[in-house]
Image 1 (cartoon, rainbow, N blue to C red):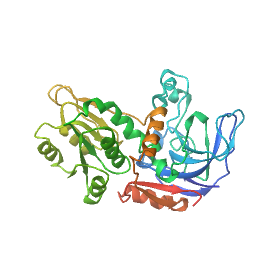
Image 2 (cartoon, helix red, strand yellow; image 1 turned 180 degrees about the vertical axis):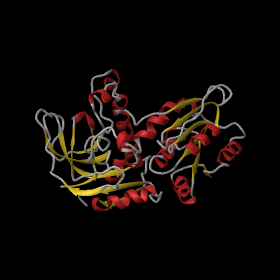
Image 3 (cartoon, rainbow, N blue to C red; image 1 turned 90 degrees about the vertical axis):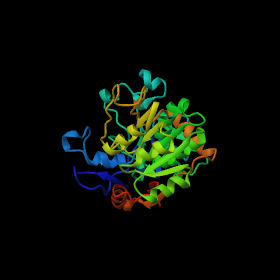
Image 4 (cartoon, helix red, strand yellow; image 1 turned 120 degrees about the vertical axis):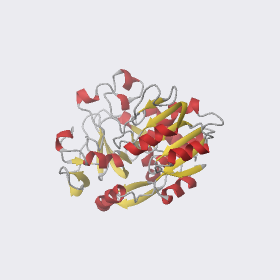
Length: 346
């Protein structure tokens, strides 16, 4: 079968031919219908050899959707042909966090060598993939897998980030979204669907801000050195009650901190290497800073239910699997509008 693999440190991913996997006991084989491409993959491929926590080659892709192709011994609850989405942050299934469905915060994953698909385990950028346990599958029903597959990360991650801040996003409040790409344009829609807050979106080009306006941002601001001042003007000098940074680079984290008001939540989701200084007199009084990771299994079900309710419209660009190296180049250059999705079977 064809698969997209990261094979050599510092080199571009390659489309290769590998053996089709077979599910072992308790596992499920999926025929992959759609797989999302994410900036996290680029981050992984930028690490030096000594920082990689897993061996190469690695089949990429941590956003996957497909149909059940085969069931390993002992698997129940699914039938051949069932359309499903893959819950990505795999955990041990038995620690305190996993018992709550919060496998994204598994307490034993590192100890046991458990890695997400595409981020250590073989991922979804292939014609077939093995899912380690049926609990990591969520039925898709009649959802379109092409537009639903980004919700497993680009939907779940902002949903998890926003959900914690819902008590602060009351009538008259303001939420700032920095970075309106794959995750950010979904975050805007989630904020509009779940809160009465005014949404201000920041990004570096007017093209990206066009998408932000299209999906519901009330105000848009170019993300530059003057962005925080503009947000202050739009909020009457008070700042925002919640700021979500989906870039996480040093300049955007600085902007996020500068946009925050008293008792605000500043949530850094992006993994661009930025960090915020925190201390008395450095940030507004009682501002809370968070760095969440992905989301829980129950939250993925909730996100898919929001999609069924028609409140999420994920903008996708689709490509065949053979164009994966080009897609990563486009993503790195900021030329993907929304989310890029690969179709392994056309």
